[in-house]
Image 1: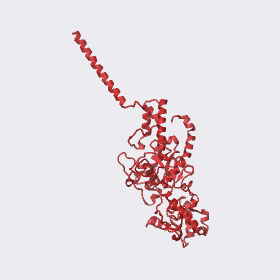
Image 2: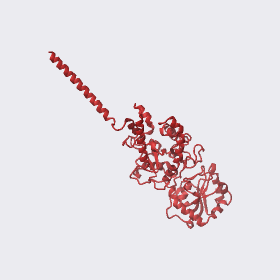
Image 3: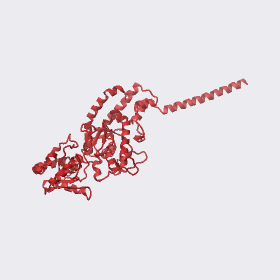
Image 4: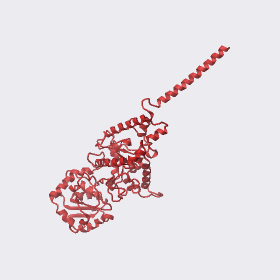
Length: 486
């Protein structure tokens, strides 16, 4: 009897021991399947947080729905101390990734994955659930931009498309810029907000709205940007924001004034918010047809001067009324009111192609789309705008293909006509030939081409990068000391 009891006890012990060992084995297998024996977990967390290229798939999330965690806070949240060896591996992974991305283009740009309500959604595009960006591999599937005069401020649309296509192997485009997925590898941070569309379409309050959609989007954008680690790192100095319409971003521009703005001019900006030192001027998108090799020469342009547009303007545009009184009776000058109605754009294109000189006169702001319509019409621009700033003037000498006249001189009787009639045929022909050579620098298109307006803007931003880095390095002098591993 005693022997039977001992045997049963032994069997019970064996069963319990087997169950314990089985559970222990399952636990060990589970832990080993969720960790890596080759890479420390802290490094894996770094890869996940910074979207490293080692992680090949990641679901898209709306940027406003989550805060991008820093490496340090991510590790703390997961209860993992940061060892010096881990930090060295993290830094090496980041350095390798950034060096690899540098091989792809002249300028490395990180772009926020803002919800579509900030960009293509403003054009009526609706993607699939969770889809932030349209498929740009097929140009036919790219959402179109509103036509007419809306097109003249479409700069952010073309830049965003070019960034989206920069990593595509199926699109033939220059390698001036490449989109990177790790913001720490970027030269600049691009904010894909279609501010001009937002102003044109949503600046007026609708029924029952307390504030306009345009104002709401600006408020949401400011809140989002100021909360981002990328903005906090640089104070916004390395961010690029397009606000080409003079009234776009009106409510947010002061709060975001540390960023690099891409503008039409500085006419409605305070000098401490926007200036040539940190910002850049981009050309309007012309709305008239581009002339090709069949551009009429001197003898085939019967008009001496051409202007068609709004004549009664405020601010610096008062000069239009004065010039109208001076020039309206000149037999070889067309100076009249015009609009987009009744085929106004096509008529303007025909008029510019029939004229030797096209007047670009200050209006409500120093610049206007008329200058770029003249350039692609190969009509020598006569610029009468004392405060105008011109695109790419650090590499283009506008005096080679434009005539500049001070406002105070232009309003003198006979001054302007005597000046233009005194320019020789040979001199005009030289300016005309120069216009034909460089008109492609003012073309927006998708896919972009070498030397067009899109590529010229990226190159202009690249020329600003050393200045941005200098500011950031000065900024880091004490901030790095306070936060040595930010």
